Image (cartoon, rainbow, N blue to C red):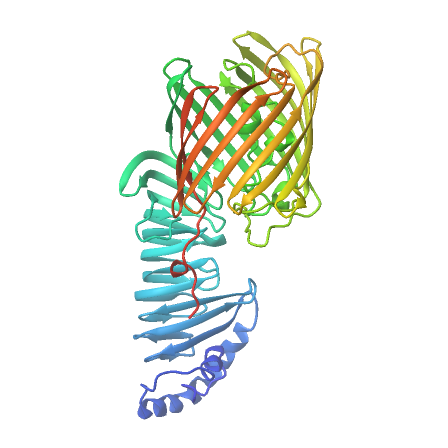
Length: 561
């Protein structure tokens, strides 16, 4: 193919190796050739300037076009018809493809599109119209746009492409569903989506199917992982009556977690907890947030294996997320505490602060068919996990009325799933608790435990666990004192592609009775889980709503052309 002009500019060199439709007349080619001599000097100077930093685009190729007008002295081009432009960034080692009804501008400044377009980036596909795009920093804006980012589809009357692969959408809507009629969506006046799945939105409405179910002034969640209870759900128990739990995030990213949890009921005063957790290091951007306080504050005597995710539930953590140090602070009022022999204990932390260190001892390996963050269908090998924690706080316990300070310590370790037979696996663990109190008392607990798991089918698990607790010394509180010394846990779980259910029985071996039983039923949709759970201990029901990470079908993902 013959170049449009005989000039050694970057764009000309690229065009010499590219194909185009034969719509430029021989007369136009002759005029361009006659003009080539007059622009040769200017184009050569432009080439020298382009070869110097900070320009990072090493190749700009207009690979298809119907008609092309080019001014080499200013690097301006104009294609009034369909055009295909390929941009390469050597700094990020990435390729960007723009397919548009028309395009004009400069590859080293701004490219504008007036008609419809398709922009394919490593972060995902974007479609829309009226584009202004700056290739050097990959920023710009477009109208009536749809973008794939962070495992979600984002719609906006206007979408701005910001630095660090951030999208800002106006009059926006977003979902992780792959269906054209999504199970859920979130609409907002303004929505900001990061490449790691963190969504921040203002003036938010949450829709299930075609029904608006909740309105929030601000919403922040990380959709790279499961989102539980995105809005308050009702529940019921014999002691509390009808109750609502309002829980959410002020901030949630790979390094910081700032949560709130408020409980409202007909029979008791409101409860509330605010927890802040901050990594002391620099975890990867796709690491899950450092969330440990909610589970450990609600059940302080959790054993090592209970603290880890069950085999059927999987884990979103990875070696990058587990090897971390976290500073935390908790402020709570009348927060309920799970005890095996009492149901009326509430604790206020006024406040509590501490530091927690987690270690991955060895290398974590996913199963053959498992993905990070997915629920495994069979036992898998994992590394040993160890945690240490030091805390200092002042506590008030109700209904005992005890109030004093405590310097606390906790350490635990849990093994990977050790395969005995192809379907049988065993895990072992141990936990140590300790405290020094303002009353002068000291107390410690040593709690080894073991868990065995048998896969009846690829989606069905039968499990049993045993834990033993031994207390030493004296504590003024009940919430951190050993209650059930020997416990047996029995579990039967089924997780199919559409339906799942759990049966969990907690049995006191010394008293020879079951002190709690949990029954759960769940229905899984394209990008959402809904269900209900019942516990005999509280004689209560809880509703379950989980928004699942993005698993968009191929028609919504990046596709090369």
